[in-house]
Each structure stands twice: as structure tokens, then as C-alpha cells.
Image 1 (tube, rainbow over the protein chains, first blue to last red):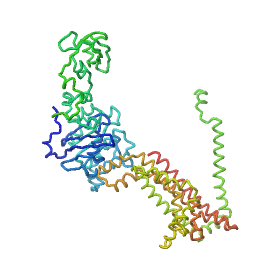
Image 2 (tube, rainbow over the protein chains, first blue to last red):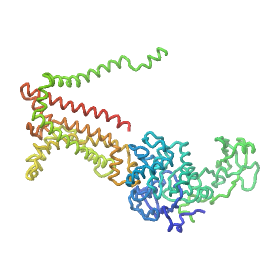
Image 3 (cartoon, rainbow over the protein chains, first blue to last red):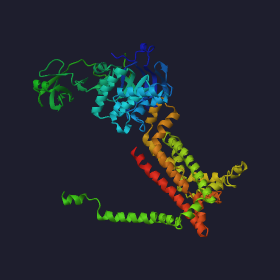
Amino acid sequence: MNDHATPQSSPEARSGIVVRGVHRSFGDFVALEDIDLEVKPGGLTALLGPSGGGKSTLLRIIAGLDYPDSGTVEIGGRDATFLPPQRRSVGFVFQHYAAFKHLTTARNVAFGLEIRKRPKAEVRDRVRELLELVHLEQFADRLPSQLSGGQRQRMALARALAVQPEVLLLDEPFGALDAKVRKELRDWLRRLHDEVHVTTLFVTHDQEEALEVADEIVVISQGRIEQVGSPAQLYDHPANEFVMSFLGPVTRLGGVLVRPHDIEVLTDERAGAVQVEVTKLLRVGHEVRVETRAQDGSTPWVQLTRAQVAELGLVAGGTVWLRPLVATPFPADSSRTPEPVPA
Amino acid sequence: MDARVRRARRRTTRTAWVLRLVAIGYVLGLVALPVVSVVQHTFADGLAPVWDVLTSDDFLAALRLTAVVAGIATVLNTVFGVGMGVLLVRYRFWGRRFVSAVIDLPVSISPIVVGVALILVYGTYGWFGGALEDAGVRVIFSVPGMVLATVLVSLPLVLREVVPTLEEAGVEQEQAAQSLGASAWQRFWRVTLPTIRWALAYGVALSLARSLGEFGAVRVVSGSVAGESQTLTLYVNDSYQELGADAQRQAFAAAFVLMAIAVALIVVIAALRPKEERS
């Protein structure tokens, strides 16, 4: 159910990233523990996990901004473990943009090309092309301080793409932006990747961002990879309770973890249903959150539409029966699996 | 608009007016009056005598020596300040805080003490003085000693301007440059230096002003021989202590020149300050 870094793709890994046995600790704190990861060439992969889980450390190790205690990093089929960042052919985008404040947008984008001493005409054409790609052509002569956060991040992305890196690494790229701009940039990054096809790995702690943008998600927590798979695989077939609860809303019904929208509400008792008392009906936008209390003291909640609530005639204080709509992906007693998920 | 609103919004109350007058009076008495009196004494007999002083051999020699000493000292402090700034901000090493504190020491102790200390180390009977003289290098009572004294009294001025800017800028811009292929040298010239340029310019101007005006430490190590080891400040002092109208005129003319340079530097500094704050 999960395609944990399948080794057979490694020989023809054109511009993919292969991480093997990477370990990194800071003093007593183990940031990464024996990480094995293969990022597919041309894909858009998300490193998803809670803060302090080690995902940024892994990204920085791939970029060469940090080095592993042990293990190797391969980029585009070459061993890059001890290459300095400037020789890795990696584009890096920082959460806080890291714009060169003294240079205009165009000069920022041109930076890598100027370092490589490309002919002036070529630099000019390439910069124009990239500014069009990120929709900043009319801001070419502005300084970063005259741009909004979203514009700065698009500039940073164009700057990283200018040198045609083999892989593009983004560290919480939309983390510093407000919700609306964030959503716009997500869609935009998805479309941009469809155009450019550069192997992209981005770090995020926002599961919605990962589910919406990525082809493949790598869930990392406490320095270990919990699961690797497509957004649908991870959402529908989480390997353990941690992945399930990190990827979306969960509630506990009869001791089993379920998604609150995968619960059937019944007005009479049937096999496998749990009897509960409705304690509260909470309107959240277009949906209704039905809070209940079971006889064993647990408080499962169900996500319904307004129409469903009206149809069932739910009121606070009423008694209903709840039944999971889908089979639970793992046994009720499986707490967080400590060892790597079996393939 | 309601009169009460206007009264409530009025910022300049009577207390404010009194405070303003006190401030203006204080600055006038302390700064403006002495400055005006120097100008007045300088030009009391018209332009011709001033011109004579400004073209005299001793004055020109002092001006040249001041330019050389202050120039070298400022260049050394600039290189030291930027290098040390990068070292202190970007690297964590054992003894870092100690080094940082020691750099501030020479400006906090009296320049006379700095001068005396230099003689104790580099004088003929000092720790290295004898050996250096055997090698043909004369430090004390010579230009190297004066440069050393000047460097010491203005040691941290560039550094202290550069450090906060480097700290605020962080390392990400440099890391971004690195991932774009820039070598250490390219990162310094294309990213670090432009980032700190206004703070650096401000520090250099401050350092230059301090170096040009240095008297105490240089006095001790120079010997102050007219035309040879006399900087402008020493020239002012020595002339002023001589008797006679000519000597007084020399002192005032040279003092005027020092003041004019200081004013020019203040204008430069004032022009640089707001730019730095904006960025």
C-alpha cells in the first residue's frame, strides 16, 4: 500500500535525489535517524511533518547547507554528500525569501547567471523569460523592499530556476505569507511545475498544502520517515495513527480512529453502531459539526452538511447511533508503529 | 473645529517652549560660540595672513602627515572592522566574547595611556623596540608609531557599526548566493559588502574624523618636531603655546582647517545616517 522508495528506479534516476542512511544529531537531540529516501525525477514531492520533526534539516543536508553525521546524498546520480552547495546544482528557496535587498528584481534573478559569467544578451533574455514565467515582468526594476511577500517569493523562485538546477528545494516556501496569498501561490506552484518539470522537493507542516500540491508526500516525524505515498494513498490508507491524524481530521469511535466525515449517523440501532447522545450542533461555514457523547465516556464527533442534519432531524440532547462508513486501515490497538512501515 | 479639540491636540505647550529655549541656549553656548570665535580669530586680519599660514612649509607638512597617518589608520581599521565583524557575527569560537570586549578597551582608556603603553612596548627600551630598531624599523617618534596610536584610539569604530547590520541581515542571503554558485569571495563582494555598505561608510567617516582629531596618544609617541613629526592637532597646540601674533594666527588657521574637515565629515555622516536606517 505504500511505495517506500523502490530501489529499482535508482539506475535511471536522472535528476532525482537519493538519500541513504542519513543520520544527523545536534548534541543529544537526534534530528534525523537513518533516513532512506528516493525522490523521483521530475516530481513534486512534499516533506510533511510537525515542527522540529527534522524535515528542514533533511532539506538543508540535500542542499549542502548542512552535512550528515553519516549516510550519503546523491543528486542526479552523482554522490553529493560532501560537495559544497555551490557545486550541487541545487536551487534553494527560503521561507523568508533571502532576497538580495540591494539588487533589483531583474538583478536578483540574474545573480546566478552573472556568477557563471554568461554573455550579457543571454542573461537579459533568460531573465525576461523567467520574470514572465513568475508574472513579475512589470516589476523588473523594483527593489525587493517594494514588493509584497508573495512577489518576493516568486522572485526567489525565478532566481533559483535561472541557473537550471537539477533539483529545486523549497523550505516552507509559503510559511510567511497570509492565508489567501498562500493558497494562490500553491495553485501557481502546481501549474509552474507542470510547465518546468524540475525535480522539486518542498518542506511544509501544512497537510492541506501537501495534499493539494504534491504528487508524492513523505511524512516525517521525530527524525524518521513515517510513510511515503501519493496524497490519496496517504489519506485513505495511512500506515499508522500518527499519519492518519496528521493528514486530516480524526475522531475516535468505539476505540477506533475514523475520519469524522466517514461516519454514518443512524436514527435506530443496527449492527456495529455505537449509541451516542448529541451534545452540541456547531455550524462551521457550510458544514455542521455534531458533537456527541458515548456511554463509555468518549466524545466522537461527526461532520455533516446542513441538509443531512435537517433530514435526520438532529437536535441537541437526542440519541443516535454512529457507524464507521469505511473499514479502519489498522487495528484499534495499533498505537504509533515504532519501526518503518512494511512495504 | 471645536476650540477644545484644537487645544487638546496642540503639541507645543508652554513647557515645551521653555525646554526648547534651554536646549538651544545650551547648544549655542557649548558649540556655536567657540566655533564662531575660532572663525572670527582666524579671519580677524583678513584672508591674506591666513593664506600665508596655509601655504607655509610647516603647515603643509603637518597637513600631509595628518592625511597619511589618518588615511593609513582608517584603511587598517576598515579592513580590521569588516573582517572582525564577519568573524564575530558569523562564527562561534572560544574566546569570542573576550575578543569583542578587548577591542573596545583602547577607546575607553585615555589616549595618553595608550601612547605611554605603546612606548613601553615599542620604545627603544620597550619589549620589541630594541629588536625592531636593530632591524632598522623605528616605531616610536616616527610615522609607524603615530599610525599605531591612531589605529588604537579608533579601533572599534568601523566594527561597531558593521556588527549590528551583519546580525540583522542574517546568513540566508549568503546561503542563497552560495546555492546559486557563488564562491566565498564572490559572496563577500556581491552580497555581504553591499549589505553593510551604509553602515561601513558611516563607520569609515566616524573613524576618519576620530583619526584626524587625535591628539593625546599621537603627542606621546610622535615627539612633535615641526615639519617632521607634527600632525595638524600638534601643530595647533604647539603654535598656540608659542608667544606672538604670528604663532597665534597659525594656531587659529590650522584649527579652522581641522574644524572645516570635521564639519564636512559631519555632513557626510548626517547624509549617510538616514539611508542606513531605511534599509
